[in-house]
Length: 635
Image (tube, rainbow, N blue to C red):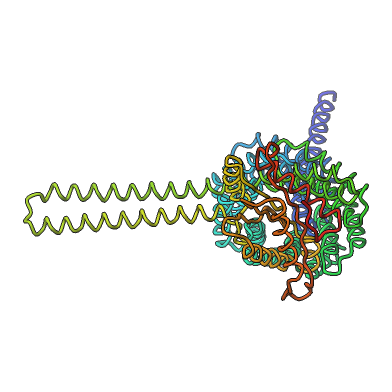
């Protein structure tokens, strides 16, 4: 009996173990199947209700241990992507790191590794770490290439193309994004096509190619709509609105921004909505019937979304926007407070890009203008002088970079030309050696061919010299007005100043500024502002002598160097120019009157030892003319 009882106990225990094992396996299977089905549903849901999708995906967190490694990677990849889409970049980065740690247990590469690397890369890029983002994009691209996955190869190229235009490497960006475009064109993936055309639109916007930029933005919007990606489609609409604004089409920009606001009642992205309301603010400030009060209301609406986005640079952009709009509202103390907050962020950056440097100079210029409006002229003048030096340094840097690129291209062309000529010469020499015994007639033909080659080389040399001449002209002429640019002005000015100083002859400087030029741009558009600059430049050139040096110093400022001209004579010249502009009949709708203010300074023996000091004196006199009510000459 005891043995039978013992046997029955063993069978009973085995039965219990078998029951639990079967039950656990069944439960595991149900959970796995449920998870896979839920993932498919959530991938659709996140395009319409991102917050709800995240909440529902997080319910699977307690069951993670029951899932396979591949399913866990799906979980981490989808969750990190959702957080990034919601602009929660720190959390997105953390979840992606968890997924990448788990991926180390895989026996072979998976496309999920690429997706996690791209997601982490975008998160750190948005947090301002461009170098780490680039590294992640390259690693992800390597995995995609090893798996021959065309779609994710294209996404990797798109990510890198964006990084390159953000770091001013436009040529490399263009090549890489075009490669991605060609890959996307071979697929039926509308989301992929939308992504690459969106980035091309941004790149062409940087390159000032407005028509191409608009075309790509519209293509991007249509592709995302077809793919059912409303959030991404809204990003494309946002780019279109910004493009309208940049080209002075403020009402069109407002309509597009409003479309995004209306459609985003069911689905929205904090980062995007911040940009939309900021855009609305500026459109209302810049439109013809400018309304800074309404603009500021929209900016405060934008601020509500600022706390929910970790986008690098968003806080800085807000304070800059706030400072400029407060200036328009004549709330000058608050303007200076916002400038101080923005400047603190600028100074915390290690290396500023070209665009960031220009924005910083604009901020300093705003502070100088604010001091001027507060009647603290000394502070305004000192800061304005500093701003001028920084602008000159930036212009010099841009000119150098531009010349360097063209120079490298020319050197490359020259190297190719030399190689071709050497190859040609080598062929001719070999032919001459093998045919040394030919008759005189054949030798004459050879000589004629040699002469033709020499003529061709001479022609190429002439074309190269012409190209170099055109390059020299291009780097010394302001492209809008056709007058000398700042670089050329300073080069020529220093020469004539040194000559005047050595020979002890008279020399004067006129510093000219168009009064209330920003109002012309804001009310009538930048195209009208450009016409004003062009016509004033034409008028100035006709009134100057051949020996005078006239050109655009920057923005709405012109400068004139007057050799053999005393202070009294320079003031007369300045007044003649001022009256001519004041009395000019403008054939532009909405533009009745344009005036200028002029500061005059003359070289005085023993006091003026360099041109920069003399320009500084003329600029000081220009501030004097502005302070006395504009449309004046001070000297």
